[in-house]
Image (spheres, rainbow, N blue to C red):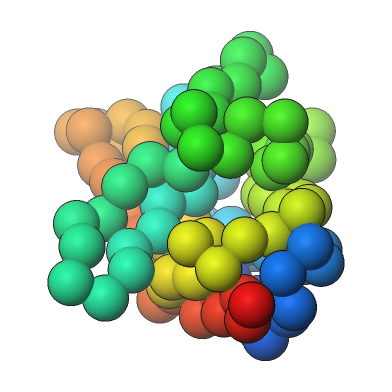
Length: 118
């Protein structure tokens, strides 16, 4: 129903910044909320930040004050501005969309690698 493609990952030194983007296509009007998850090697995937259709945001404690999630009004592109990056932020970052189109759905992007060197 919704296809997601992430971009913007890469290698950065500790203290640096990166901006991730997630382009959505398909039944974007059916999206209720979107978010960014990450998965580090040997760890479970965790929610980093989310934003609802009403623009209410939520962040995991470890990124509060450093990361900002935003979305354009047409819900076509989701962003994650990551500042003051730390080595522990190293992970594959996944874009996510939850919505309803005849039935509830959850869509995932393919992921983008973020590596923070110390």
